[in-house]
Amino acid sequence: MYTKKLMEKIKNIIRGHSLFMLHYCTGCGAIELPPTMTSRFDMERLGIAPMATPRQADILLITGYLSAKTLRRVIYTYEQMQSPKWVVGFGSCTINGGIYYDSYSTINELDLYLPVDLYLAGCMPRPEAIINGFERLIEKIENGDADGWKHYKQNREWYKKNQKQALGDSLYTTR
Amino acid sequence: MEQKKVIEKISNEYGIKKIKFKKIENQQFKVKINKKEIINFLTYLKNIGFWQLSLITAVDWIDNNQFEIVYNLVSWELEQHIIVKTFIPRENPRITSIINIWPVAKYYEWDVNEYFGVVFDGNPNNGKELFLENWDDKPPMRKDFDPLNYSKEKFPEKEYKNFRMKRKREVIE
Image 1 (cartoon, each protein chain N blue to C red):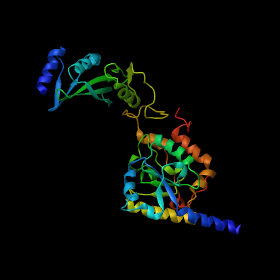
Image 2 (tube, chains in turn yellow, green):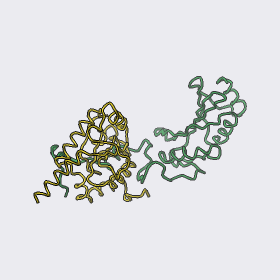
Image 3 (cartoon, rainbow over the protein chains, first blue to last red):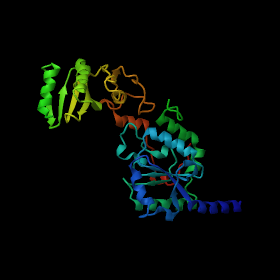
Image 4 (cartoon, chains in turn red, yellow):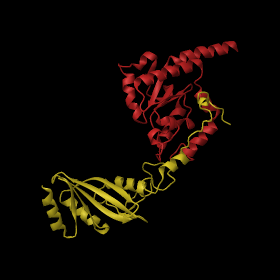
């Protein structure tokens, strides 16, 4: 029992130091990522690198507003990723809808549909804020607090109910 | 060609004297026309050089109980830009499609059909979905559609009794 806990702690520390990020560029937030990745702010010194495919990625970064149509694709993407996986909501649109609070096709709160581990507030967050947020995420992962993927597994029915309310009964096909 | 000459040419050749042209800028003018004349008039305009259809859109005049269908045409030879407008009633809105004149109109008309509910007779895509998936309300660009209400119903927000609870995940029953 003790060794199992110890192993989990060691695993968590290792996980926190090798993060591959899938940046799903849904909205305007994507424009802040190139400076964060490239030489000026250089995200890779923190151990975070971009990854092209969802199956090899650990972090799903939702940059900006999500329309209902995009949410369907985000859910596909999230369910393809292998656990442990973390979701970062980026910008104020993922928190409460932002300036699109009254739009007919933009969701208001991402946490109802996918388990968000960390929010980056701001419209838009600067690269400094992004780096700060990622440091906080690494800290959470090392402590074992970032357990959204477990929450999604345990409360799958609740999440599916919310997703169906927003997207209609057919979650995996459009018709 | 100067705008005055273009306007003169159209009003002489097309043969309806009642058409009123209104200047917007040096290279842009607009004209209102009857719904029945629209196919003839657009065909004529295409033949004299306005061969590029750059947009079809609609405006919802809810107080007058009318939809305004707007056709934007550009001529690179005459260096002019014409806006052709026509009005149709808001109840049971129908108008003839122009896909036989400009095939590209298929997508513009489909767009207007989805967002305003205007039926274009002759367009095969009436009623199919283009951008909206599983749409279950009235067309969203109409003025009597309330987006805030729809958003509140369909995409609700969580209620947090204690804001600190957000830091630790709640157990969902």
